[in-house]
Image (cartoon, rainbow, N blue to C red; front, side, top):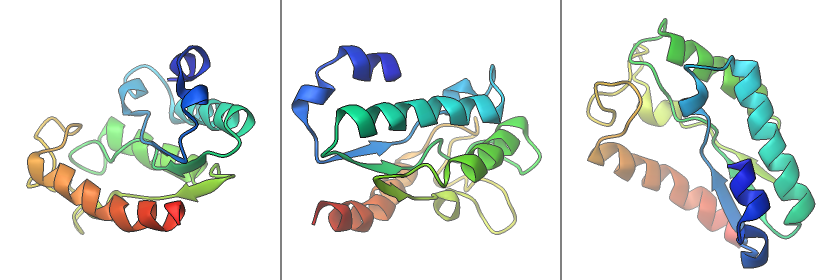
Length: 138
């Protein structure tokens, strides 16, 4: 993502808002601290090079079907680190949108692989984002 920001047309596009949902694909190869550091690098670049662009930071979507799974542990650790990164924007946790009270991913919203969303998940994601995006664009 950072390479694309640095080498693409994003800076010239000058978006008012970027929704940054990123990191889960790094879970197999990187520790939570490394994932968070990558997210921080992206936000730092946006803040420096796109001064009029706000960031809605989500980080990785909830992952891992159960609380003890490696992806869930890394999700929780990553979220704990990144929640203070939204310097010119806002942090939004989507845990309550996708994680049931017993700690399992909602099978109505998340696929059985513990990573991808179902149609209902995309709908829930959009519903959770809409009021925040609307507020940030005012």
